[in-house]
Image 1 (cartoon, rainbow, N blue to C red):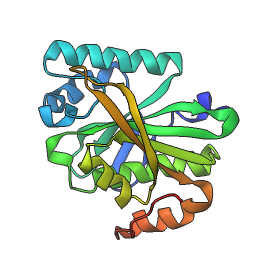
Image 2 (tube, one colour):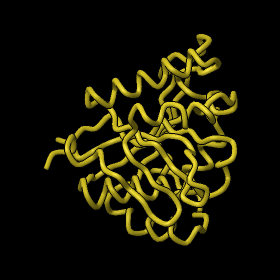
Image 3 (cartoon, rainbow, N blue to C red):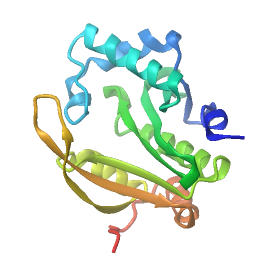
Image 4 (cartoon, helix red, strand yellow):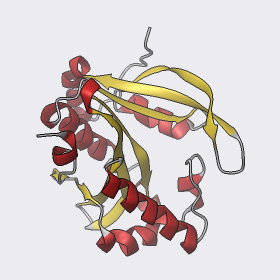
Length: 203
């Protein structure tokens, strides 16, 4: 089965459920999306309801075109929409994909939702899709995201300078992280235990 068929799956454990978004998720996600903190380092800006609907429409279009699998994240302890994460840049021939476009509402940050959602996405990538490499990238200025990636066991690989434009015209330096298939068993145990890893940098 191709990644186009098997990547858009419903993933769940006792903490979170992830499933591909649909039109029915528009209002639930809207209710938590208009928080400026979410978009500070995002490659698109959501300041108004009109911005949000354009953002959501783009996510639906990317998913329909096979460019991304956009997941709604539901916190199972409250039953509420917590945010969204995606698979993208899926290079099946090279067994490589990216996890990104990640955002969570204010009530769900620092509560373990990110860790368990990333756990499910990594598990599906390595154990169902048979990926060899899962990568992440973020703004070099986004210390919170960088800290979160280190906490899930991703290895920092380096920074690509002047990588892309950001809203407002700033050029972003993008720092890359990855988890490889050989590293997944250790990362899996790390995520299950909730312990923080030692600092890792690719050599």
